[in-house]
Each structure stands twice: as structure tokens, then as C-alpha cells.
Length: 110
Length: 122
Image (tube, each protein chain N blue to C red):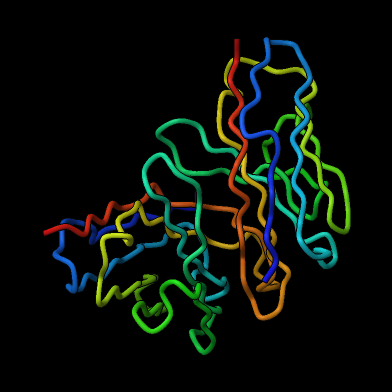
């Protein structure tokens, strides 16, 4: 079973700053089947990035994903106050089909 | 517009059962794999189960295998999760989610419902 680790646990930045979130897998994630989700307080999660680097429909271009194999990154180029949320990575390409999530990174806006 | 609306949550005693439903609309339900994901309030997301588009294939997290059963009624555009032998640690908000792409079961979760809270307590 693939285990995902996210760092840092919490990121506290000011509006306009760049946020870099890391997701590391215990084994290689096949075909970049790695997604990122945003969960704002009191809301359901929302898909941000899939296939490691493809933005979902309607996601602003300040959000970008990169990486392959076991190391993946979500970058928010210029933080906005509405980006206050917990961000989760997820792998969805393992066999048998297991769809594990990382523990999340909380982004606080100063 | 894709809509997923969960129902059926509530308070249940340890050892009890509950059946969650997820009513889908705005898309051709029978074309998409569906998932259940749960979240203890204040904690992270945990994948629970998934079912393929025609209901012939299912998978479960080890923590719920043998106790939970996922199913679907494509004629009624509804996804189900039967929860049996419930434990305190099953207390969580349960989300249903639709995969992004109809062409593959290995697809991220593109649409989510708002969740239904299950509380297991005596």
C-alpha cells in the first residue's frame, strides 16, 4: 500500500507570497496518478490538480502542480486570502485499487 | 450541473447499522465510478470504498472491509453505503464523490457532495 506524507503540516504566509507544498509517496505513483484537493473550512473538498500537473476546470492559474515518481509539489504562486484551506494530495493509480490521501497541509494566511 | 446529495446519517449505537444514500443528478450516473470518503471532524480525508459504473466491482479500505457494503441503483441514480457493526471510530462525515472522467476507474474525484454525519455512540 502506498503511503503519502505531506509537509509542512502548517504553512503560515502573507497574501502575495508563494506557497510550496510537498507530497512524498512511499512507492512510485504510477503514471502520475496524483491529485491535489483543497478543503476550505466547513466545505467539501474540491479537486485542484490531477495527473500531477493538470488543473481542474475553473481552478486559477496561480495553482500549479509538478513532480513524478515519489515526489510531488503543489505551488500557489501568489497567495490570496481565500486560499486559506487544508490541501490534500491523493494517489489514485495503485493496484489493487486503493485511493489513499495524504494527511494534509494547512495553509494559514497572516 | 453535477449534484450529489447525501442522506441517511445520524446517531447510532455501537454495533448498529445505517444506510447512507447519495442522490446524483446533472450527469449520466451509470457512466461513472463512484466513491465514499469519510472525515472525522477536524481530521483528514480517508478513502472508504469505490464501485465501478455497473456495480460489478467494488473495493474497500481495510478498516471497513467486511462491515461496509457499497452498492448503486443506476435506474434511480443513487449510490449507497451500508454500514454494519458500527464502531465509535466510524464516527465521521461521509462524502460521496464522482470520478472526474467516465473513461477510467483510475480517475481523481472531480465532484463531491456536502457530506452526511454519522455518529456512533451509546
